[in-house]
Length: 113
Length: 114
Image (cartoon, rainbow over all chains, first blue to last red; front, top):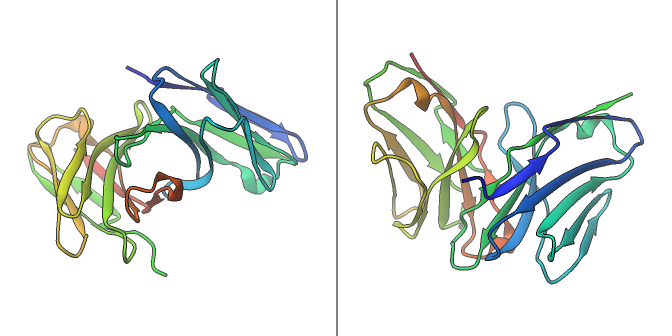
C-alpha cells in the first residue's frame, strides 16, 4: 500500500524557473514531512522538513507548502539551477514510529540552461 | 566529522548465497536504519536499530535480518539471495529519536544477484 504518492515522476525546468513537486499522504497519523535530495551514486540528503502545525517553511530557495486538510504537501524550488538536477523524494513519519520514513516514489528533476 | 560509512560499495552474489552488509554510523548516533532502493519500488524501509535493539521492522521476508553492536555499528544479512534482491541498500543514522534532525544516509551498497 503506497501511503505517500508523489508527482510528477520527472520534471524538466529551465534555469531560473520554479520547480514544483507534489506529494499526498493517506495516514493522518503522519506528523513529520521531510524532503530528500539524491544525486547519482549518493544516498539521499535531507533538504528541508515541515510539521503540520505550519503551512509553509522556507529555507533559501526551497519552500515546503503544507495543506493539512487536503493531506498534501509540495516542494517549490525557486530560481532553479542546473546543480539542482537530482532526484527528490518526499517522505513522512509518525510519532511512535521511531525514525521510520515512508517515502514517495521520487521525482527526477532536470534543470536545463 | 565522518559521515555514514557503508561497506562494501559494490557486491555481486549468486542466487542462493547469503550476504552481509556493514554500516558505521556517524559518531554519537545511536539509531541506525536500513532501506532498500530499487527503480520499481523506490525506497523501502527494512528495519531500525537503537541501542542494539530492533525498534521497527518493515514488510520484508525473514531472509532479511540485521543487528547492531554496542558501538552502534550495524550489519544486515540477506540469506538465500533471490534475483529480486538486487538493489541499492542504504543505511541511515540519527542521533536519537529526534526526527527533526533527520537522517544522514550513507552512499549505499549496490548488490547485484546473478
